[in-house]
Amino acid sequence: MKKILKVGALLVATTLMVALGGCGSKDKPAEAPKADKKIVVGFAQIGAESEWRTANTESIKSSMAAAGMDLKFSDAQQKQENQIKAIRSFIQQKVDVIAFSPVVETGWDAVLQEAKAAKIPVVLTDRAVKLSSGNPEDFYVTFMGSDFKEEGKRAAKWLVDFMKKGSEPVNVVELQGTTGSAPAIDRKTGWEEVMKDHPNYKIIKSQTGDFTRAKGKEVMESFLKSAKAEGQKIDVLYAHNDDMAIGAIQAIEEAGLKPGKDIIIVSIDGVKGAFEAMIAGKLNCSVECSPLLGPQLVEVVKDLVAGKQIPKRILTNEGVFPADVAAKELPNRKY
Ligand code: GYE
Image (cartoon, rainbow, N blue to C red; front, top):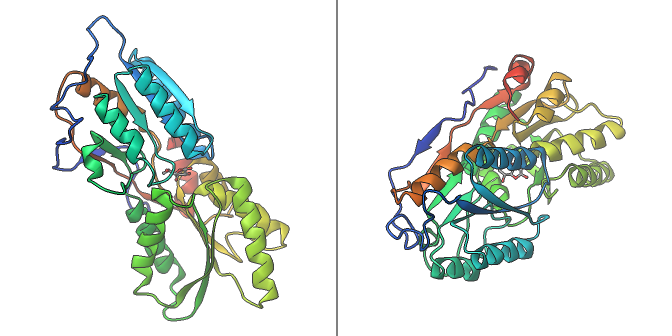
């Protein structure tokens, strides 16, 4: 069945949980701005590692500008220490709301406590955090973004359905996202959950490509080399994002193989570059993950400043795009 499973219009589903955290809507920001004062938002972005990230930054900047908010934007160049520095500087500047996309899950305890002590509400966009002690939900008002585990499951389900291999062995190589990041952890877990029932799909090599094209290419080159030396055939590439898949496509071509044919490729994000690769027959499927979180962030910031209740989880609704719908869908893609 090769059709669009769900069209990826950015619909927002909210869970039933509402903000209960100490820095939530119960406690209004200490210095809620007056009506005539611009709302100041500090946003600590991860970096510009992928097409997804660039689209996410653009969505946040343009939505904030359109809403007349004062955005203090920081690019951490994929380094947690830079993100922590940026958040500390937002606290010092007494911004109204801090939003950030945590590069990795752990290591945020101290800075989140500092934001809470300063009574500045924190919004997690895109990625989740884990604390070494305590409930992370006490330290942020809402977490908006995708269900990465579900994306991993969708990629695996699509593959099993597409390959129709029964119990024949299938050798998979995996390009993982940034080590320790929520999407890398969850996309792996989701995939493995589905593949528990299909033990013939074996991950023979797995390494991080840090969500970038350059790293994706480099790691795929080494996968191809070592598989050749070991006399193994690579049947499938599972890449945790489209950029790494696009980098790997280059490596596969340079090795004299046909990406999308000799090696079946499934990745995640649904960026334009992936649609182009699918139309060229080099990528077989991209599972959607929408970066267009700006409008939702603006709504949350407005509600926070107005002292309204915020749902603790704002989930993005997304679809799956196999290569045979790529040409029809490309004109509708917004990122
Ligand atoms: O899949 C990847 C980006 O956190 C969902 O980060 C995001 C991921 C996305 O660099 O391309």
